[in-house]
Amino acid sequence: MDIEKIVQQTKNSLEELLKITNLLKGSIFILGGSTSEITGNKIGTATNLEIGEAIIQAILPIIKKNELYLAVQCCEHLNRALIVEKECAGKYNWEVVNAVPHKSAGGSLATAAYQHFDNPVSIEKIKAHAGMDIGDTFIGMHLKHVAIPVRIDINKIGEAHLTLARTRPKLIGGERAKYTEHSKHLN
Picture 1: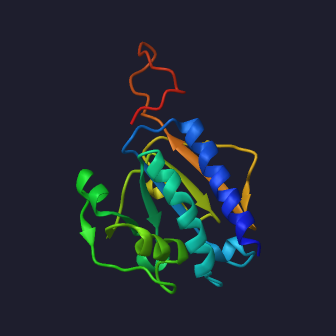
Picture 2: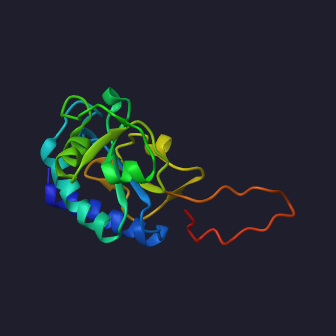
């Protein structure tokens, strides 16, 4: 597996999504991914810490440059908990839980995030503003309502299916209501 190609696909996808979403500073970007799927294997069967490490190290500078918070989804063995910076958990008033991801429970991306964040903590649920799902790990449970799929030219990272999403505020009211332009992202 060509790790440099995987890293470049991930960075390009993230940068394109960030251009489309126009996220506000302090917004939450969720990353879910299966390194097993990236390498062409069934999810949860071939965890690859080297790929997880490479992806996290590649996207963290982009996330920080855009002044966003990164939330990395753990695997099903940690009930899809998330790794975030303690500052983020405090800002959004999320309850911290006690779980440390590792190769066999949490997955490679969450393990790498836990190792590279300044002050990582685990939380159980969030409502992120946008996200990237590499390998169909179902990040949708952690996105704000209303989630909208984003299509770009890249639709795979390695061998894994790529899904991107942004969110928008709910449209409430009825036929007499007026709405802002959908392209304007409100958090």
